Amino acid sequence: MAMKIRLARGGSKKRPYYSIVAADSRAPRDGRFIEKLGTYAPLLPKDSEERVKMDMERVQHWLSQGAQPTDRVARMLEAAGALPKAERSNPQKGEPGKASKDRAEKKAARAAATE
Image 1 (cartoon, helix red, strand yellow):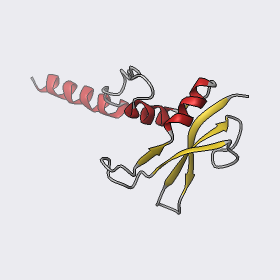
Image 2 (cartoon, one colour; image 1 turned 135 degrees about the horizontal axis):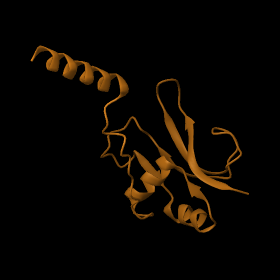
Image 3 (cartoon, helix red, strand yellow; image 1 turned 180 degrees about the horizontal axis):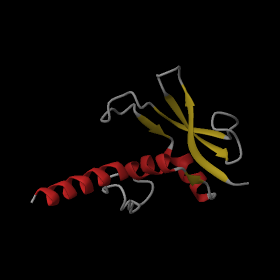
Image 4 (spheres, one colour; image 1 turned 180 degrees about the vertical axis):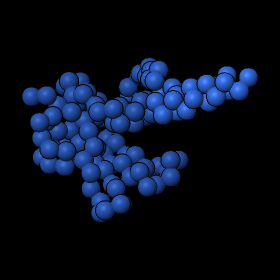
């Protein structure tokens, strides 16, 4: 059984509140899970102690059993010191989009034509 440590959404519309759960990867996002490991309240300030709460002992247990954290949970675990920092690279993030490139080319062509 492929295990994931992931977020399960709760809360009302436009007021998100997440549970950090250990679940079978085939189960629905907000459906059946095996164990609740903590909570995440994104509406609280980033420096608040109540924003992310985790039972680190149980998280370590599930990681040792082979559970894979999702990207967002992995970032929370890195901040808590439970996982080593992963190197992330997105070389296309700094590139302008297609429309912006087209505008720059047209502007350069107009500048060259007027000279």
